[in-house]
Length: 157
Image 1 (cartoon, one colour):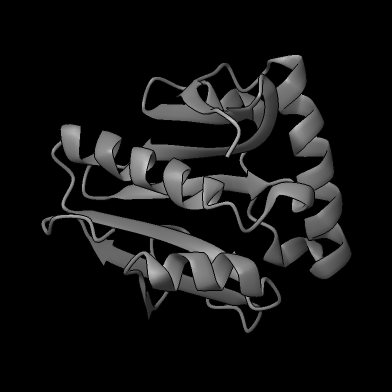
Image 2 (cartoon, one colour):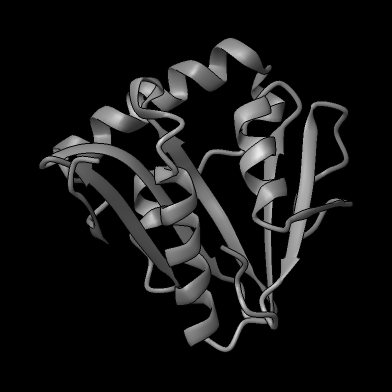
């Protein structure tokens, strides 16, 4: 497998903005505006957020962030370009985000995704996330799937 590197990145970097353009276009094509809970670049640049990118052979192919909400960590903006899905890049990013959350002392990671994203749902379920109800400021919505995972256990391979 080609070399994969994961590192902290400024969400305003040009290669990240290109990923966001692709991700946002994908989400807007699947869901109405009230179902898209997208953090802006400025929200991702706050001190309580760590944002990662994954690069394959030096080319950025994925991203994800983790937000420290005090009582829990929230996974945001996970995206892997379609041409490299299936290489476990999303899982590697997710594992890194969970590790960061653990260093903050977080014991719960939560996320929101959509019902029409089987790849994302599969990734999160395989990583140990379980479906639950809305959290934070999220309203109940039939197109939203809310998931959480205990971070107190050792991550499964």
